[in-house]
Image (cartoon, rainbow, N blue to C red; front, top):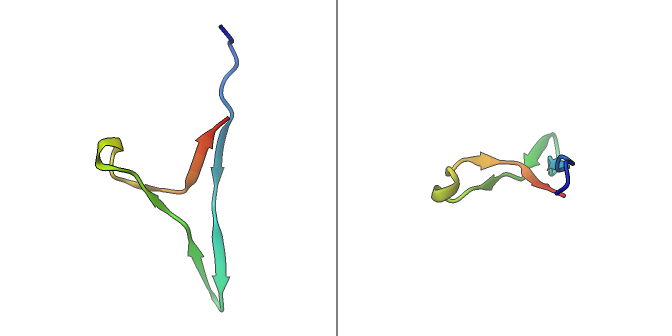
Length: 43
């Protein structure tokens, strides 16, 4: 068994439209809390 900790990745995906920014948010299923968050994962 390895004692290494996982590498956690979190990204903020956005685009600029004129003077405004749009941000990509993902909504989790109700079973996983139902909250909104940015793109993330582990390696």
